[in-house]
Image 1 (cartoon, rainbow, N blue to C red):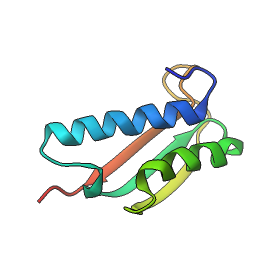
Image 2 (cartoon, rainbow, N blue to C red):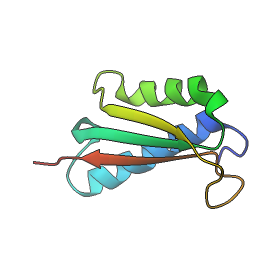
Image 3 (spheres, helix red, strand yellow):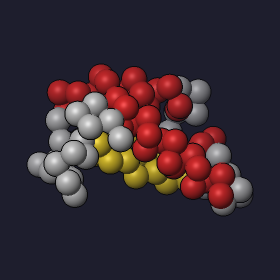
Image 4 (cartoon, rainbow, N blue to C red):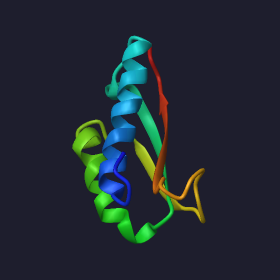
Length: 86
């Protein structure tokens, strides 16, 4: 999904996180922290824009870290999300 497009990959990842949270009875509103890993920190604006589409109002603590690579060359972005579901 979104090969070569960090914005599209970020959107898909967040939708995956949202689906997982819904499966546990939660939603993105319960996310308190995200850690974004990217193989190209120069794409921070594209990644941040996609992240903001979902978390603009929620505003979890967020960090973005550049890594040398992820599990396959096609993956440009990976996101960890910590959530609290009461």
